[in-house]
Length: 129
Image: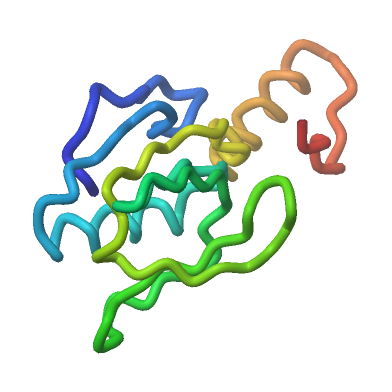
């Protein structure tokens, strides 16, 4: 886990990194940050050394490559890009994590609570927002 802000740990929601800007001082920092970004189910904003700002979804990272890089899908164009770690000046977990609060345990708890109240409880998944 990347050291960061106080994360939301209430029982009904998964911790969230939304809004977090990790320190990218070392290669180990970058590896940890992009491992988290890969697990994050929201968009991130990447600012490169040359000033580009890229809003994207991280679908892969290659930290073991000779020149480590992150693989993203740009938010507006759906274009896939490879961005070398060493060119990234800042990473922000900017988008909402669509998986937050949607763990199996949360679903079972909600299902059981609905059944206990006598409400209709479905085995169908909830729609993604």
